[in-house]
Length: 304
Image 1 (cartoon, rainbow, N blue to C red):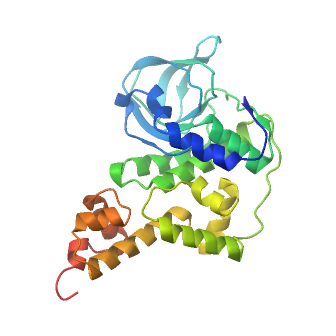
Image 2: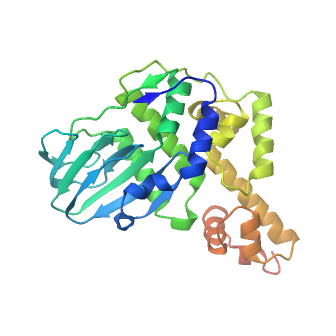
Image 3: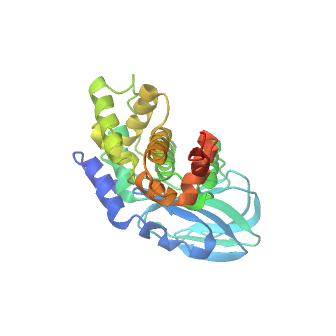
């Protein structure tokens, strides 16, 4: 059950995520697969051999099948185990503090999304004006094409390891949480639609904020708070105003900074990567090659 009253939802979203953002994924074995934690939750691309598990968390989790898997048996709480063939795109929602049991007889591949209770509450309050909302389980076999599309996007980004775009992952987790609330929450209020982009004042504030903070790790909630908007509304308004989502804007700003440092300073490429917000020299090199079609070393080559 998500409960609370309005007011400081942005601060709850950010503060809770900053203190224990990594621990949310500890309920899933490290051997399950690659993972990435953000301020509001985390994702795991899980590929596991035949086995079983009992699962219980104080946070909300959802799993989306990335490949069909026959003969899975599962149940929530004290329900009787149900056996079924899991199709591609099947969604399983494991609400906070609801225990589940699962047995699978073949290799199982899915994308697991964890969303902190405080983050989901923040979305419920800000996007839907909900003081309380109960996220419910869905019948086994339920296929959700939207959830599958978001899961595939997250899988591809997590696969990039230390080169993964954390703001993109945080943005998609936010969108995923909104989708769950809109479709699978019992207390629903019609969301307020964004009529336009950011105001001139908000656009200037967030542009200045990104200019001064582009090299540090940022979440959707960080940027939304600058504009005094909810995360979901901010994502839509920012994209409409700037013509691209926040993660792409930030990536281009970091690449611009890296190019300037490479041209105008004698810093090593590793130092340039650190100063411009990339996790390593190889991260800067692969990203610059992918989006600017040149490597840092080539950019510094005589004659360019």
